[in-house]
Length: 165
Ligand SMILES: Nc1ncnc2c1ncn2[C@@H]1O[C@H](COP(=O)(O)OP(=O)(O)OP(=O)(O)O)[C@@H](O)[C@H]1O
Ligand SMILES: O=C(O)C1=C[C@@H](O)[C@@H](O)[C@H](O)C1
Ligand SMILES: [Mg+2]
Image (cartoon, rainbow, N blue to C red; front, side, top):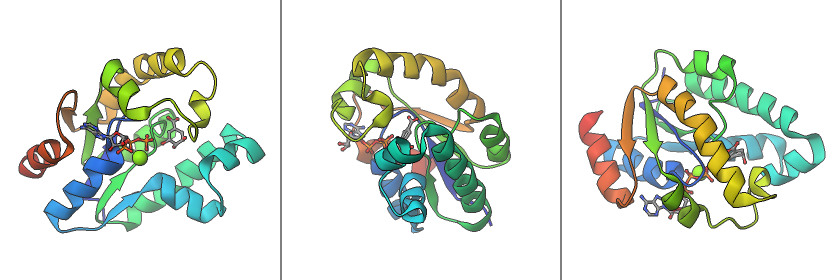
């Protein structure tokens, strides 16, 4: 068993939004790895970061990724930082991985820079810019399909992906 598609991309790329639409088009279930982690931990991600720290969150993220890659056959959206660990990137090899690319301007307007994103708690604009620059090559490295999302509606992106997969 393997997911029909694994979606990666930065915060605000539209992983959850486009992932749900794509799953509906393919007639398969959708699952968000962030939601699975919250369910397993019994608390929201900002609380996991606050109580146990990022390292603990990343360990939960790897365990969740490995379990879902082996046991889920729908569309799986990953957290924005799931590509950071080499172990995770290796685990993604051989799977259909969709990279939703987004440039800074659209990412800022979609993310909103409000509460709920522990990594963007301090100096959100500069942090988001750095995070996009740092991660772009990592998303590209794991992707088997890349789609640009800037200035495009989620429905249009999901249609393109459904046709390409
Ligand atoms: N292509 C798009 N055009 C305009 N707005 C979008 C697009 N995709 C998503 N959005 C909006 O941007 C916001 C963030 O989208 P979404 O939560 O799907 O991103 P995400 O990649 O899952 O982010 P996160 O990393 O936080 O999980 C939502 O309000 C969503 O409605
Ligand atoms: O960009 C990141 O590193 C993160 C993105 C979210 O999806 C969550 O997985 C968490 O807030 C970390
Ligand atoms: Mg999401």
